[in-house]
Amino acid sequence: MPINKIALQEQLLEIINQKITKLEQLIDDTRTSNNDTKSSMGDKYETGREMLQQQINNLQIQLNELQQQHNLLKNIKLSEKKVVSLGSYVKTSLSDFFVSVSLGEIKFEDKKLYVISDKSPIAQALLNHKTGDIVSFNKQNISILEIY
Image (cartoon, rainbow, N blue to C red; front, side, top):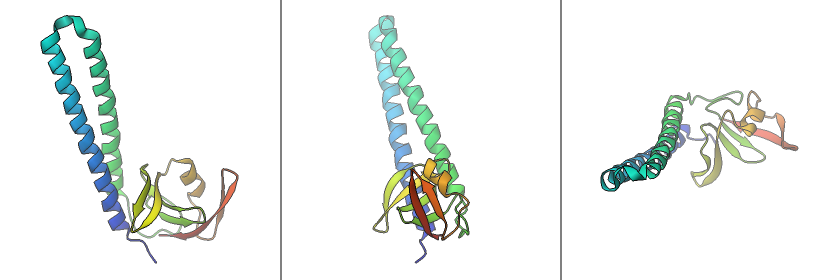
């Protein structure tokens, strides 16, 4: 039975949106903390402020990566595929995979599946193969059962 990739895409976009919202809140909270430290402590706590600024920078990098994932996922072509490629839902003898962005294991329509980037090692093994092919990954043979 074909998978509803539009519903899957919407669920994944919602997951990413939730992560973006949490990160934006964390960045705001950290900035507020940094400003509070600045106004109440004077200049002798520069090290603490610098550490908070580094934390903000790291959070900003994570936020940018999530926004890139969101844009990539939003623009993926969901048409049915003949070979494994970006946007493919792949049923294998090992597990089910959706080749898109790196979000790991999720539950969709009461099934466990792995949302993987096309740059991940398992995706690299599966890419450009078709239904019926057997690929080798981590010294394990994996059969491609269906591609949507």
